[in-house]
Image (cartoon, rainbow, N blue to C red; front, side):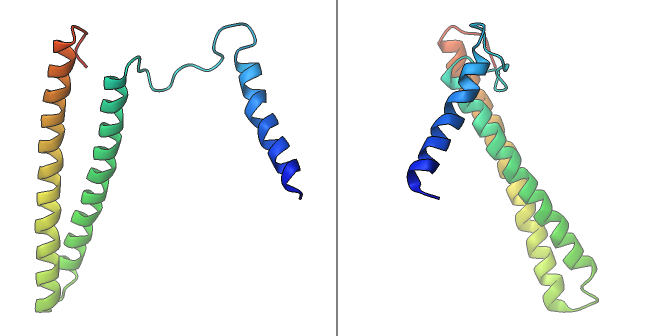
Length: 118
């Protein structure tokens, strides 16, 4: 395919949803973020990131428990399982504490700006 055809296809694809979404002057799709300002958007991005990291820490916690339980008395695997469980637990604690600190800071910023709390 020539490059010009690809560019034309991308431009048409980019323009079609906007014409159908704003046909009657109102947005056709609701705002999925439910954010009106930057602080709210920032808070949602942090919540999404912390949720993903918490999911990863939980997977490592399960993996450490699996390694520990299936070690069969092998000292190296027992040590590896214990270390994985320890560091996954530390990770989960850090995630929870960082979430609490971020919530406090964001709520303080929102209260100082005179808007409603998150």
